[in-house]
Length: 116
Image 1 (cartoon, rainbow, N blue to C red):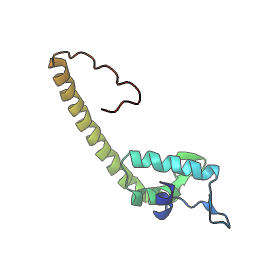
Image 2: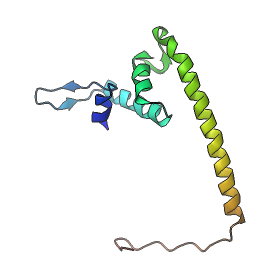
Image 3: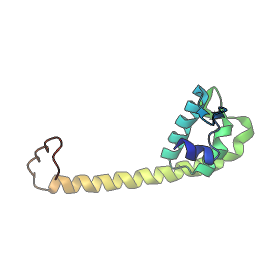
Image 4: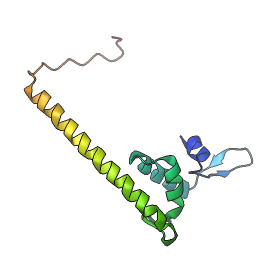
């Protein structure tokens, strides 16, 4: 995962003479931001544009030089809102099916280490 982030230009850890990567607290915070933005459905290309715009002391604030991204981020938010609506609808349908289904007895837990 970290190699992928580095290859995509999202992360640039320091390299030791041995070739090993050395991660700082700032790198750890960057990875947290990347994971959050990926979970939101943003592409790595958009994340690569957003990361440099986030103010260092506040991960939720875009710097004044990157206001051109605001429109694109609003579009992503609208997309997320539509996905949330669709998921809520799907969950409601599943709830209705489960409520109408006869109650099945709980399945016993498999003993540890047994193969089924």
